[in-house]
Length: 398
Ligand code: SAH
Image 1 (spheres, helix red, strand yellow):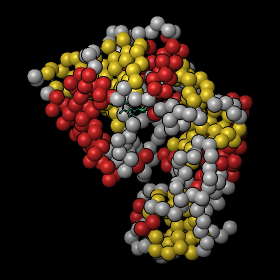
Image 2 (image 1 turned 135 degrees about the horizontal axis):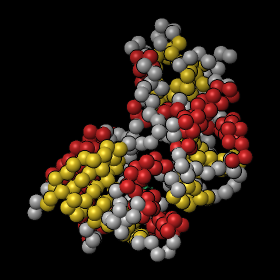
Image 3 (image 1 turned 180 degrees about the horizontal axis):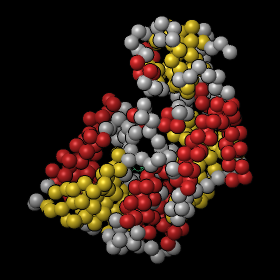
Image 4 (image 1 turned 90 degrees about the vertical axis):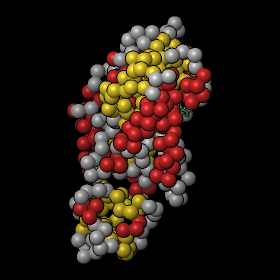
C-alpha cells in the first residue's frame, strides 16, 4: 500500500536514527500526498531514505512513529505490541504481584504504542487516546483486549474526552466499548480500593504510586502520618496497613476525602485511626496543630509545560519548606513531583533550598520513580515523569 510521505530537512533525521519516536513540525521539509489527522505516514530523510512510519497529527509533534521498519501496521502488528505489553506486566511487573489486580497495561511510547494509555482495573480496561491515529484503532484494540483477557475482561471504557488533541474534529464523548460498570473494587498488594473510572481523576486511580505506597507502609509503624493531596487515600491505607498510630488525609476536594474515608473503611472498618480533612494543603501546613512523624507530599503536576517551570519550582520549594517546618525531629518526609518538565535535579534542588530555609538537616533515604508498568524507553526520556525523595529530617535551627 502506498502511503503519503513526509521528508525531513537536512540534519533533522538524527533523533529518528536514535529511535526517538517524535517528528516535530519544524523538522519537516515537504509533505507528499494527502494527509489527514491520524493517517499513517512514511518519514524519510532528505535523500529519500526511509526512517519510520507513524501517525500524523497537525501540531508541534507532527508524527508519532509506530515502527522504524517499513512495515504495514495491520491487526497482527497491533496484536503483537499489545501482547508484548501484556507479557511485560505478567513477567516483570505488577500483574504477577501478590494480591494485585490493578496495573497500567500500556504506557504510550514506553510500550512502543505512542498516544495510547490502557489501565487495567480488575477486569475493566480504561483506554485513553492521545492521538487520533490511535483513536481510530479503538475497535481493533478492544477486540485484541478481549482475546488477551478472555472471560476476565468485564468492560472497556474509552476515556478520551479530555485527552485527544484539541485540533481533532471528533466530538468524542467518554463511552463504553464493552460492558458498562461505572466503578469497581480493585486490590493492590492486598489493599482494597473502590475506583470510579467514570468520575475519578485520570483513569480513576494513581496506579503509578503503587511501589512507593508499599515502601511507605514499611516506614509507618507507630507513626503520626499526614498524607497531603491524598485523593483516594492510597498512601493512607498503606500507612495504616503498616501500623501507623494515626493518619490524617488532606485534600482540597470533598469528594476525594469522602473516597479516602470509604477506602479506609473498606480495609479497616469504621474505627481505624484515620481522619479525612478537606483543606488546602498549603494552609493546612501553616495552621495544623499536630506535629507529624511522617509526611507524604504528592501534589498534582505544578508545571504542565516549560513556560511555567519557574513558578512550579517555587511551588515545590514553598510546599516542601512548610512541610519541613511541620515535621518532628527524626521524622520522615516523602516528597514527590509528577511534573514531566521538572527534572530530577531541579526537583531535588527545590527540596534542598526548602530544607536549608527551614534549617533542617536532611538525609536522602530513597530516591523513587515510576514502577515497571510505566516503562521508560531509553530513546524517549520524556516518558519519565515521577520523582520522589524519602528524607530523614533532623534538628531545627530556631
Ligand atoms: N496521592 C494521591 C494522588 C494525588 S492527585 C494518590 O496516591 O492517589 C492530587 C490531589 O491533590 C487531587 O486529589 C486534588 O484534589 C488535590 N489537590 C490539588 N490542589 C490541592 C491543594 N492546594 N490542597 C490540597 N489538595 C489539593
